[in-house]
Image 1 (cartoon, rainbow, N blue to C red):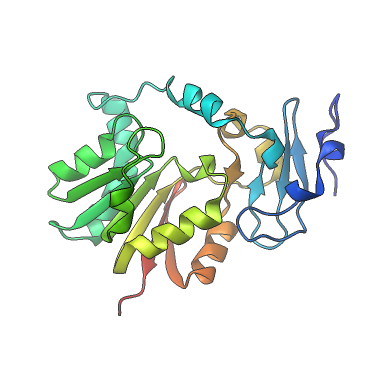
Image 2: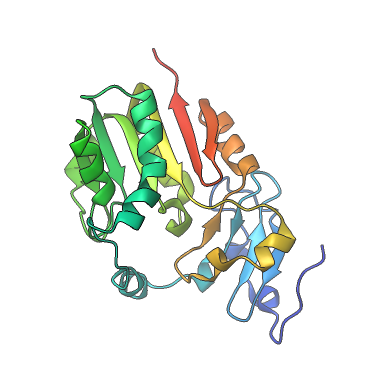
Length: 230
């Protein structure tokens, strides 16, 4: 498979352990792209594009990057951005209902917006709100905005989210999607060093089938999964 040439061939340095898809565990990923800092592989089964684990930041480095984010509740532009995840909830789940904002960050703005809309919200973040008690409850909906691209073990995290959502409930996930290799090469989204997994529509469709969920693409960066009722 053709790939971009660079002054250093990162693919040649990869260990066998890094050549497994972190989402479906396939051992058949192929080179997809490389830049000056790291290589990107694509799984032939679920089509996830991912950065091998040897190129991941340490937890300390990762948190330092997150601490630079300036997301505040009175930033109307940021609230408009988050409304793309709020709207699918309001349109599908009647308040009052219980929700979890998974990966809320240092300022849980979306959770606040949903609380203002009448929902009973809980928050979780491994760095800023690491209350494991909220992961022992169940919810009518879960929001996960600009989070899943940071996750090194997406299969474990997604399986946990499916476990936490009630039958008939929804998971609203926001992340920018892979289109094709040419677009990926020009894509600013891949340049964030904390972004390590990249999803396409076919990846989300694989996830929906694997977990027996309904899947609906709300917009170019929002996908809604619904768990069957019992």
